[in-house]
Image 1 (cartoon, rainbow, N blue to C red):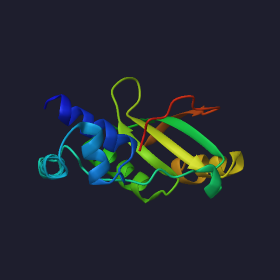
Image 2 (cartoon, rainbow, N blue to C red; image 1 turned 180 degrees about the horizontal axis):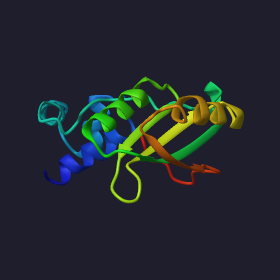
Image 3 (tube, rainbow, N blue to C red; image 1 turned 180 degrees about the vertical axis):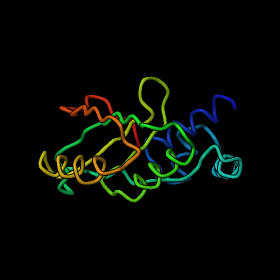
Image 4 (cartoon, one colour; image 1 turned 60 degrees about the vertical axis):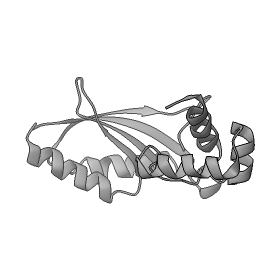
Length: 147
């Protein structure tokens, strides 16, 4: 990886729909050289995909919380069952297996507080693997670089 490759990745991170001609211009490359580099980054798996950044509030999502979830059993079967349940839950937009005093950190996006309470109680609260849930309500996001 060199400075030009870093620049390509920065530009694509900001705007995945940038044209190859504009990307090449911003990176000081010819369009053909730029395209070869981007294709190589895709082949190598450095660029894993492209996404649309959604305006969640325009979609009716007005409540975001992180939930730290502790399991009552540390078996592989327990972890896999929990992960399957979270994969099926549309409210969970991120599920991370973490180290520390709990096993998982979830990002949950729903309409409002009553919707979160229903998810907390009716989805997470009924899972036999769940031992503890600590919620952290997002009040604002002054920096959010997720794509």
